[in-house]
Image 1 (cartoon, rainbow, N blue to C red):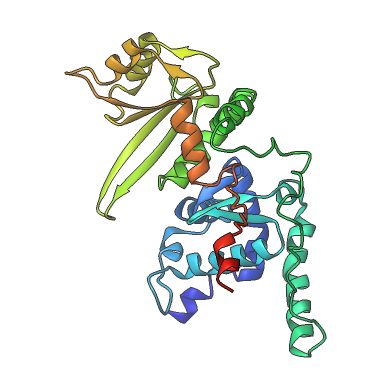
Image 2: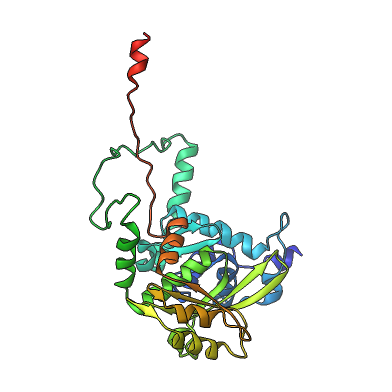
Length: 297
């Protein structure tokens, strides 16, 4: 077994393949999808990718990639915004192979220096006052009202391919796996293809349609999407930044045909907030003076 394990590339050789895999997957992937894509890039046979790690449920190949991901996150090349989801950072999207491979040497140098006592532990750098104004690239801060409209205005201003990538990240954050953007390949009106696994036993293929609409989606859009689904799956999701007409909702749940789950702009905004995707909920300190306390001193 040890001789076979030695045929799996060492951690050092996997830094750039991991980043290259994320590039090929539109900048984000779940764990299984990333492992599969890295294996394809380095042409690693299935019998090697399936070798179990000596301890725990992971494969040896998956364990080595997990190690690399943690170091790339340290180097700000990738991020892990939701459990099981990995994305390229702005730095990672433009990093060269040499810059990516430099991460491991910098991390090793820091670890060595820390062991010699030359590097002080990081200090808390969060010193900004809670009332500090938002950065220039933020939309601003909102109370209970207004944030959904501001968020949806920003989403509606995205280009169609970017909205598809946002929807893909949303599905990954919701626990879908192997989600791929299919729209650009002219895949019969289907924009996203993914998989849902229930209790690690049942697996369903799910197709999704994404419409970055300012206004409403009508029943014709729902029927066209269902037609594209035919013969491929019975599970479909329609995602829009706009709204659905009453007839569209009726068509989505019509008897005798596969039902289609609908995510409209309001539901989309709430999901983005729940998953912290471009939305940050800040807890503001409130100071309340209690006059009765002073009366009892």
